[in-house]
Image (cartoon, helix red, strand yellow):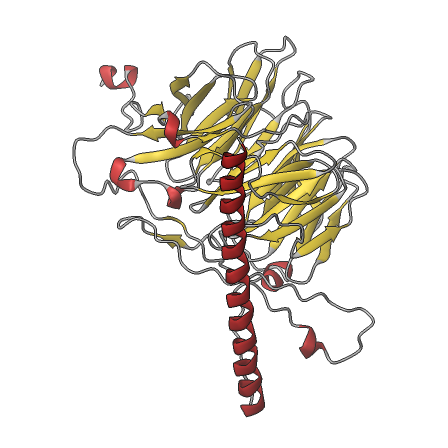
Length: 476
């Protein structure tokens, strides 16, 4: 028994990280150099998105995961913002929908074609305007469809119904200083924030009230982070008065003293926490560090258990974190990071060594799937729901994504409310009578024709660029 106390039994003690081979990286990417502490990278089972340097505006790349190797200078981007893009976030309920926040004070929501971009995308599905200063944080609701949070340097948090383009909640009097980050809890009923005033606040956004707060969470002046864990506790990273990096665990019901507080080292990069609720592992990636440290959170003292460090030579400019359903369960992969260098993006695979080829169900409890548990309206009316879970036993097969439809509410329109029900991403269509059916058939025909014309244009585009390349070769 004494022995067991010395060496804690954990199936994650031997988790090891490994960078992929060079030809599996994404090369020749001009990663954004804007000074902002977001992760600059967002990934899902289909795409990796990376904020890049763009002259005269803001842009990000969206690459299908298999598009590894050198990325051509002329590769299309998502480039509708007029100022640098500061943060991007994939919709958890639709792998083709991504939100971006920018220095131009707007939030934009984009629909990416199923196979990626063939032309640059300049037209978002919707532009969300409401912030008076740059928007540095965007974060989708974990369980309700089309609910998006944004936070800006106007110290305001806005929660939008993307399906109608409306700002339904505006928390503009809770923060007196810059908001460093915002995190939803597991069912999206609460958010926690960290701010430059050194406070962590737990907020009920629908009641618009602060449920709990902690002053001087970390005494140092450098940026903090605060995230919700699955059990409702809060994990923070920050700096001590002596500029040592710290991590801490808090119970929101009693914020007086932390459950655990650890000093790490004296590096000055902000520690970005990435959390996996299924394994209760937190991965800490310092901006400008060249390592990823990871810890297991349990309910036994000391509560935050150091597991290991993945080290490399190159510092990281940013980091993407794959949702669980995008991992390879046959290889016992429990996390995959997308590490940004100055000119490339390098996947890093975290694995638990196992001898068996069978599905390891203790590593892969059912995990959050891509279905939304609630519609936006239900959440705004006060309903809560946990994520809808899926099994990874046979791997995750991405389904078809419906297009995001935005039905703007027209305030000047006094027709009955029935016409204003927004058609959300997966809202079922109800055809009423025969004339509707005829119209739908006509619409289908038109859409089919449009699609075939678009395909033709794409093919011609490809042909033109091939011919241009041939010409260039001859000219050389």
